[in-house]
Length: 214
Image (cartoon, rainbow, N blue to C red; front, side):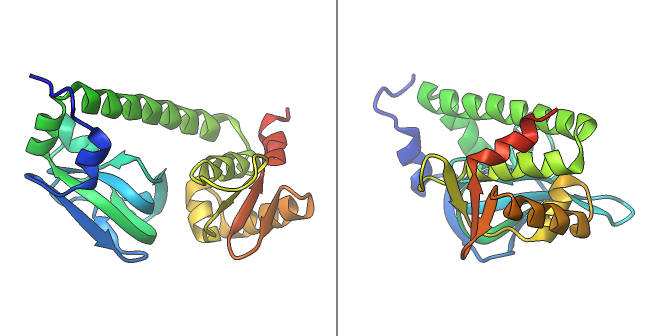
């Protein structure tokens, strides 16, 4: 029977049966492609990128997660092995929930609402990424990814968002182009006043003009 006093945020912030609070260093792998999948991760602090490596050795970034995001949830659909590698971008803190603990938590309506809402938002984001790759230029894809990254920032003025600096190699993997092209577009965006560097990366809302232009 659902517990009316159950708070999913408090539940996720504390260790307990089937769940642990873990801390990772910058660039440390939380899990690797191909290893056994038996838990779901919830990001409490930091950012995580999800990468896939092809049999030929080519690596691509297929996801980027911020605070409040779940990842590694493929095990809930019966996937036995990790389909990607999760790597920290800066120091990270996560809650690891074993599959059985997730099943128990999903009996609580408040937790189920939180998880389902996240999954639906994630599906919309993935579909948007697919359309973006099929129909837009690499310049527009870069602009869109920078705007999505800016959503992770909780402070700053309404028209700007400050985020930790992301390497051009990572941006190239996300966009599906070369580092040289990313460097060219980033310099262009800075000259136009769409972005700025100051100990991190400042994204101006005006960058939307690149995405919306015909």
